[in-house]
Image (cartoon, rainbow, N blue to C red):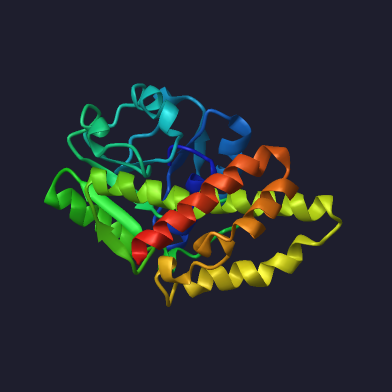
Length: 250
């Protein structure tokens, strides 16, 4: 396992639970490498050149430094996988004759270990044989396996940023507003839960409610006026986008 962050931790622990043996963890940070290796009962290293000879290498290092790490490892044409939503699979072609992608479509944090059973895993490989090998691994983790190409995966990753990262940012803004007004953020949790569950049964555009749908300028302007200065334009832009999409639906 190359990496010791949120994804590397959750994925490697799930792989161990599924019966796969992880022989070594690489991380540039000794404390993190040692911590994860302890959970996996395996060796660790902070030096890429000292990465073991293994059957499969799973890279979960940051996109910005992955090639820097890969350049220093001898993969010996074994199966090399990256786990990124946005990196093209072909980046691996210079490192091994056998390569592919195993991308779990989920948000991860170290302190919250997630059951992979219902997590979609997007798979891609350079050969049919390698694809079958990756699927064999993925099926030990999840019931939801999808073969995609790099373009589809990148688009899904972008969609995930909209659905998850941007949405979570809105929660953070909402929490800052409730805190400034001495109100508990917990009052919003039933609303947040219902919003999330509703799209299991209704198309998102059909589930959309609120003043922006009908573009109630009286309410919108009141909110913009009351908004913290740094969020006024964001509120206005999102409201306009919601209304435009709602009008396009008609």
